[in-house]
Image: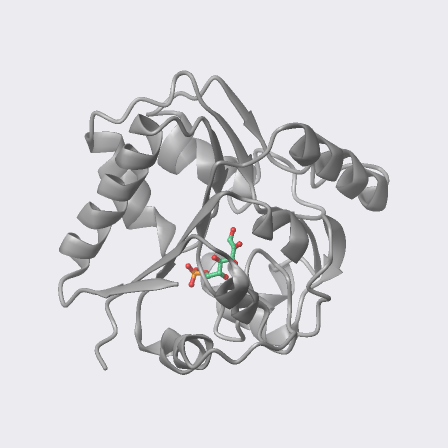
Length: 229
Ligand code: F6R
């Protein structure tokens, strides 16, 4: 794992856009994308940049179960609002949160992923170490699956909803193995709330209790953070 620390978030996000642009120049066409507060500034800078995704396809990490695509807080809506509307991709995919059978939807999504290997995966990290919605204890060999969100994750995401009761209890997420298949991974960890968990990953703990710790075994991971030692 390579780590770069930035005292300025502006510099951090500029570097992230640079890395993404370089990946494109080296032939990446299939991107794994994330949502959340960490990615908003990134997408905003990407939208102002000249990086062109019109020959690229994207797969998002996850989607809430039970929210329609046009629900304000669905990840489908998030991606449209912050990125796709401004930077068109050739094709974009997210799990369907309204599928009649979410378990079957997870299998369908996993099969799409296996047919379209991800060149470049963007990741945020949860305070409990989750990547995608793979909560602590998720097996490292997991594929795309239906997950019940931890209360702490719902609490962390309640800021985007009117109240915690409105935060869905389930999601469909790429599995840890699905994420680890990406050729290259960029993880962004910003803000004090991520300090402890990031430190545990950097200390090379390798445990299913910290899903992000799996990244210590990936050959091509870059971490950008604004947290100083
Ligand atoms: C979102 C996702 C999550 C977030 C994580 C951090 O698609 O997969 O793993 O990256 O919860 O969220 P923020 O950036 O809001 O702190």
